[in-house]
Amino acid sequence: MEAIVRAAAQILVIEEARAYVDAIGPTDLNDPGRLAGHLMAAETLLMRIAEAFTESEPTTT
Image 1 (tube, rainbow, N blue to C red):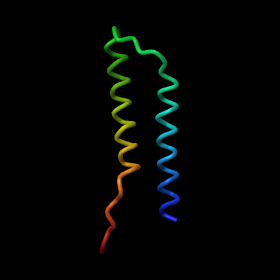
Image 2: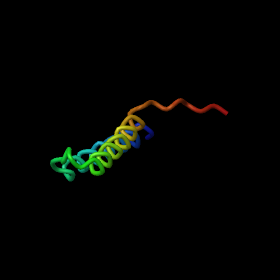
Image 3: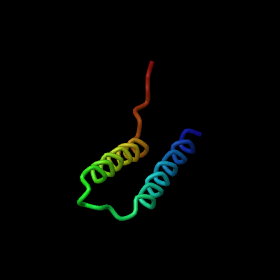
Image 4: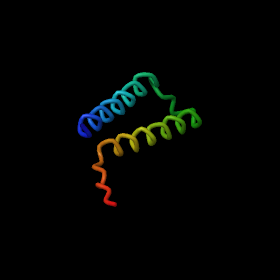
């Protein structure tokens, strides 16, 4: 069951990244504020993608 939930989370985060890229359109490189915003959003999405695809360590108690 954990594998199914993990796969679903991976699909969702990839779809979120695709939707973001589709929505931003062309980026004006002369607008530093907008460019910085896109870069920060991309960094956040990449971290979420990496987290979704990184194997979590089993917890032992």
